[in-house]
Image 1 (tube, rainbow, N blue to C red):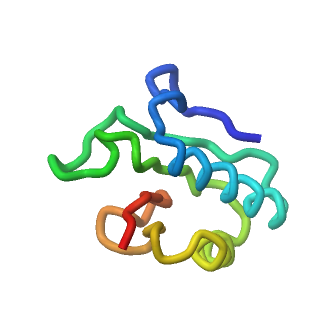
Image 2 (tube, rainbow, N blue to C red):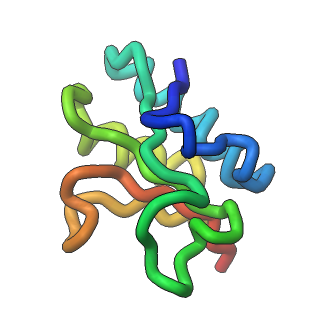
Length: 104
């Protein structure tokens, strides 16, 4: 089940490709025993000027309390492929999963 952190996280601002990725990742969250996928940012929040967030091609997911985060990230990368970047564990991305549609 997908929920939003606060009222200013607008899922309707996501592009079709980003919304597709969210649905896929929500399924992976559930597969690993997580009942809720919490979106913490779409076009809201603090992001760099060149961020894919502003155009609706990126979103962030909460990891606090999430089971098997590394497996979720790896499986989501495998399913979504090279046109999506899933960032976790890097500077500025240690407390959430960042997902963006970024065709190569």
